[in-house]
Length: 349
Image 1 (cartoon, rainbow, N blue to C red):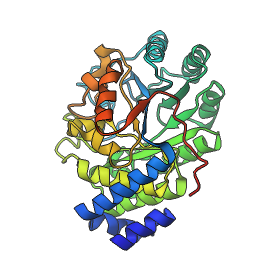
Image 2: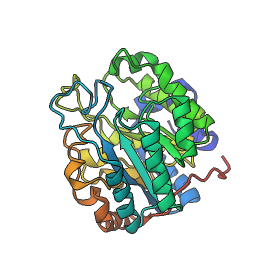
Image 3: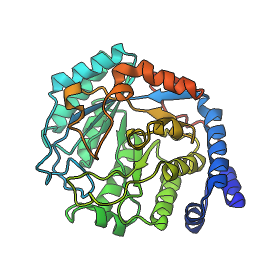
Image 4: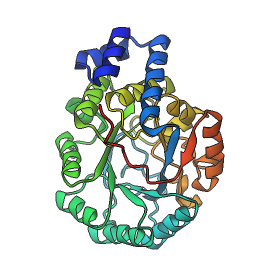
């Protein structure tokens, strides 16, 4: 294990079987070595900075029926909502006043948000706040759609690949969704000049150690600008309601590995981590993460954007309580910063 970890630290690469070995044979000693190296690596590039993104959950209406997701179209118990363009722009204005310089517009694949409507929202945010980055997380769209939104000013796009294994993808998605199309979308986004984020759930149903190794190998080859991973948490109104949730332990272990695979990557300590453990986000930062995403959405809709059960949506999760989050980061020796937080590609790796 020591030899594998040292080689990963020096070369940022392992063979698929070696990644699998690193996961299967993990122990607390290996986790500590990885954690220490990941923190050292991140500090060389980003110091003690933790970047914040203002998250705006614009709609929980979705045409897809992903088997793990609480806002899947088949969930009749989901109380649907959709923010108006005016509400979304107001959220960004409020976030700007709070010091945020990146806004993440996230939602289900809601057909209301056509290129014209979504592009208009992006243009308006950029015209009001030209020093800000706009990130979209609106699922699979066509090449022309991604291209149009890029010309409107979108800087970044988050699209979790969910799994790098086709067979596993098909076990957790409906038949009308395609692993090939998900991967094509990620490459289209890269081609169009977006800063691109991918990611996956940890301990998702039917996931094996080999699947996780395939995810790590994909990250190694794709080199995403951002990588969002978080523990799988079941939702009571989905086919996977009885599956076990993922763990903070394995999620943090993988965060450390990902930091060593691609040192400059922007790596969030996710809301899901904070949901399954009160100090989950702190543990993520101490494992190599360097991004948190407080919620700028109107308070009355936060609970409705429920991808999984018991999502935290008050207190420090609120962007308006940024000072609370800042204090929590200070306690572990880090500093919240509100600039755009672009990836530092100049890092020699």
